[in-house]
Image 1 (cartoon, helix red, strand yellow):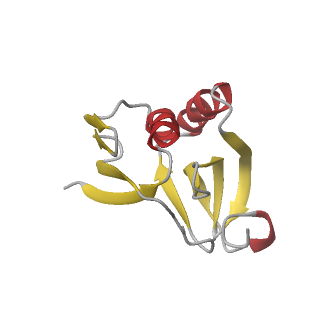
Image 2: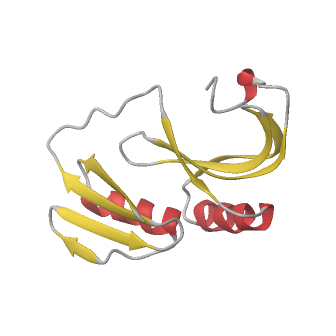
Length: 133
C-alpha cells in the first residue's frame, strides 16, 4: 500500500528542490508543470502540479514518521545544509508523546515535520509543538 498526495505549487523547481531534500529522493517524473516522486520510505506517491495561485491551509501540517532519533538527525542535517530546516525539537513532549523532530516549510508555506516518537506521554503540551503552532 502506498499513499498518494497531490500538492499544488507556483514554482515547480523550488518545490522539486524542497521535496527532493525532504524525501531524500529524486522525482520519478519531472516536467515543466508536473513532478512525481515515488518513494518506499515513507510509502508515498507525491505529485506536484503547477498552478497560478496556491492557497494551502494554515491550520494543518504534514509529517514523515521515521524509526529513530538518528533518522531525524540525518533529516535535520540534510534539510539544514540545504537551508530548509526551520527548527528542531529534541525530546519535546507534544500531542501526548515525547518526540524528536525537525521542521521545514515548503515553498507554498506548508509545514512538514520529520519525527520519531521516543515515548508516550499523558501530557499534550500544545504551546511548544505542532498542535498549538
